[in-house]
Each structure stands twice: as C-alpha cells, then as structure tokens.
Amino acid sequence: MISKNKKQILEGSNAIALTIKNIAPAVVSAFPITPQTHIVEDLAKMKADGLASFEYIRAESEFAAASIVLGASATGVRVYSATSSQGLLLMTEVVFNIAGMRLPVVMTVANRSVSAPINIWNDHGDAMAVRDAGWIKFFASNHQESVNQHILAYKIAEKLQLPVMINVDGFILTHSYEPVIIPDDKTIKKYLPVYQPPTGTYLDPKNPVTLGAFFGPNNYLETRQMLHEDLMSSLEIIKEEYKLLNKTLANQGANHQRQKLSRIDNGLIEYYGPQKPKTILIAMGSVIGTILETIKNFKDVGLLKIKVYRPFPAEEIVKIIKPAQNIAVLEKAISLGQSGPLYADLAATVMASKIKKNLNLKNYIVGLGGRDITQKMIKEIIKDAPQKNNYLKFIGKI
Amino acid sequence: MKKNKKRIELVVKPGTSLKNKTGPWRTEKPLTDLEICIGCSLCAKVCPDSAITMKQNLKKSKLEPHTDYNYCKGCGLCAQVCPVKAIKMKKDY
Image 1 (cartoon, rainbow over the protein chains, first blue to last red):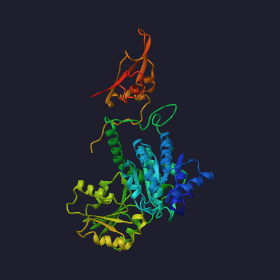
Image 2: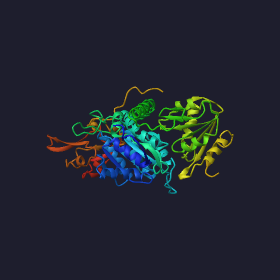
Image 3: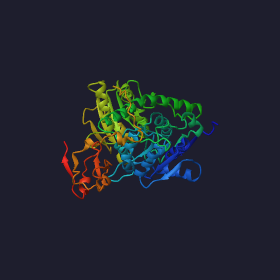
Image 4: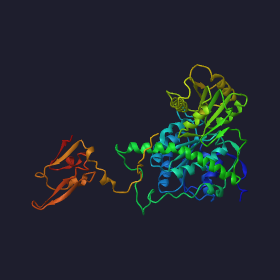
C-alpha cells in the first residue's frame, strides 16, 4: 500500500520518533534532556500504547543509557538512543567505546549549547565535543532530511559496523512543525533489511567472544588506523546509499522533495548557487534555510551545505570551492582558543589541496546559545567576506 | 592514502589472559626463600594474577610456592602477607 506514505504536518521530534518506530530497533534506551525530550517521550508513549515492539529501558543517567545501548548492540541487535548537550558529555566515555568496539549504534543529538553558563538553546558545541570519537556525523537542516538521514544512518551503520550520530538543531528542528513524509515500515524494510550480524561477532552464550578487549602498544595504533580508514572509505558508500535511498523512497511514493533548489546533492554535501561564484558561504544544520533565502538576491554568492561532517568530505568540498575567491564559514561552535572547528577543517583541506594561495578564508561564529541568525547578519557576512581583515569574527548583534 | 592491508581482529575468543604475558610490566620481582617458607599458601591465595601455584615437595613433605614470572606483575602483595618474611622484593630491570 503506497497510501500510507502521505505528507503530514509534524513536529520534528515526533517525525523522528515515528521514523524510529518504523525502523523497529530491538532496544531503545535514553535519559530525557531538553531539547531531545519529545523524541524519547514519544517513543516511550508508543511503547506504552502497544504500538511499538522495542524494549524501552529506562536509565538513571545518560552514561547508563549509552552503556545500555552499547551492551544491547554488542548482543547483535538494532538499537537507538538520543540525547543533548550535557547528556552527550556525560556519555562521552561510552561514545568513544561504541566506536572503538565497532558497534552500529544510531543516536540522535538534538544540538544544544554546553554549560556554563547554563543554556538550553541551540548551537553545535555538544556535537563538536565528541567530534573525534570515531562516529559518522550527519547534520540535518530540515525535518524531511532528518527523517531520511535516520533511515540512511541505520543502513550505513549496519553495513560498515560504524556508529552514526544524527545532529538536529535543538528547538529549531525538534520543536517546530513542517510538512514531512514518514516512510512506512514496508517502505523502510525494502531499503533496510532485518539486522543480523554474522555469528562469532556478537555476544552469544553459545559462542562466547570478548568485545572491547585489551590491546597493547603492539597493535592499538593499527586499530585506530583501521577505524580511520574505514570512516574515510565510508564516504563513497554514503553517496551510493543516499542515491539508493532516494530511489527506493521515490518508488514507494515517499519522496518529499521540496522544490529542487540545489545544483549538487550527493548525500555528503549540497551546493546552491551559481556555477562560478565569487563568494561561497559554508554552513551546517538548520541555518541553511535562512542563508538560502538571503542569497537569492546575490548573483555571485553560493551556499555549500555540509551534511556529513565526519568523515570530512574534503574532496567534494574542494570541487565546489575551487572557482571561489572568498569563503565564509558560518559556525554555531567555537574551539575555544583556536577558531570554529569546521573552519580549521576547511583550512586544512585548502592547504592540502593547494587550490589557491590567496584564497580569502574567513570564519564567522554565529547563533551560540540559541541567538537568532537573521538575514541582516547573513548580508553583513556576505559584505565582510571579501575584506582583508580579522579572519575570525563573532556576529551577535547588527 | 596508504591502506592498512591487514585487518585487526577486534572480536577475540576467550582465554587471552594466558596468551598476553603481563610479566614484562614488572619493575620489582618477588624472590622466595624456600628454606624459610613454611608452605602456608597465603601468597598463592592473595596473588591477584594467580601467578603463584603451590606444589608438593615430596622430599620435604611440604607445600612450596612456585611463581610464574610470565604473569607476575610485581605488585608485592605476596611479600606483604608472608608471615615468615620469606619473600623479598628486588628491583627487576
């Protein structure tokens, strides 16, 4: 039946919860924290109402919730968790373990700033705190993208034995309403087969094994190299799987493509604007909508959206930014004492690719702690981008 | 990028604590004077690595501790508990 894949107006959190229900994990464990709360509340209610078959394990903290999904995943079943901000920081040790043990855990992070001072609103400080943990990191910029990225995440995670984190901007995406299609369970099953890891790779009393074992100086380095190389080679697989997902959804009448605005869209990045732009703005997450609306009035300004932040799609980015003279990186995070983390990645990419010696690469820190990013600010940034002045600016008020 | 050809097996079978010899971590080595030892077995019971086994000495008809230096990490607990001070810790480097 195709008719179940209909367009509905849903809250972002509710859309994610409904998608997870249709993906049908075996175990869900989470600890409520603003702004992730509605996602796990909805999942708990679905379970209580008998609409979902997963085990919902209540945890006494985020550390416990992450440990529960780690353990459940180690027994070879599909799992889900979600968190935000301080919760993600409390999970940190487990987050690194999940990646090191190569467990296909999928987790939503409703991005929120990090204390102190305490602030519950959106920025990317939490996601950047666990940047180097070894997870694949998706950033969604609208409801439909977050829904589709969750389905893609499970496919990638289970195919490559890598954990995937889907970042959705707290409140801006989790608490707002948008038209969205939730692919039904049959549609999802066509794309995402039942998860069954090979015997001898998971915890089973009949076939005892050790996961997360001791590795000395003789082989620890190689385990990290292997994880890094597997992450890097996942870039191509994400591109292929993204294409396949879109095809499957289209066949089942579940492709809610808004008006096609982007020139390039391959699952890793999306580019909007002219073929040979003078200035390119680079950003991640929900701010894309505001930037897109603003650059409509600029002939020579392009917008590059990063959808997969780790592994870093350097090659794809170089292809896009090659013709540009000015690059403005807009970030909702700051690596205190250095620059925005995305800016640092871009700078390394530009250096390694040797594309242009006199490229004007600038960093604008915006929207920290939920500060509104206005069209006026974007216009100001477009105006400032070609200027030869301070490379790092905080844009708060104009 | 150079590919790491050999994949490291992260999932391991049980029994690796015998395979991984932890003796080289030691900085101090316990030496037991069997002339003083009364064969009480306290050292074997307290050893956190189960590196000491008690064996019957038929000539003297008493138990004697045997320390497996492949696994002894040199923590010194055996020397601490020995009631007749038969075990001395010596620098091991």
